[in-house]
Image (cartoon, rainbow, N blue to C red):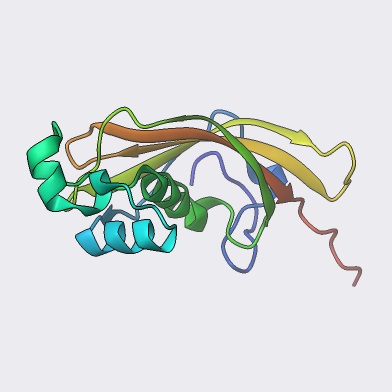
Length: 165
């Protein structure tokens, strides 16, 4: 993989030092969103918004004519798709998300693909074994329409020192 060097964590994630600013990951995983995804997520998060869960309301009272997928599910999916290629096993924790946008709706049956760009990386000021990486995640529908994006700041493990022989 261009822009990534060295051995990955045993779970597949990259260590802080392996992230190269400017590198763009084009994630191979995609996911088709279902009505069940939307219903379960909306109900699990106690979100009664009829825009997501009421087909009759949407058909008679919205410009879309059908339920739109809960945007929090969409952004969660976008970030989730990125994990396997980037941070599985090496994230200490997420520090925050900024510039979250949903420029177009997602509907049942849309298939989401994702890219992740590495925007910045700096060593932690308080933890010598960690650093902060900022990612720009973008999610697209099957026709190429951008449906979600965010900047995410992740607290990442540095590569552990090599064990003496």
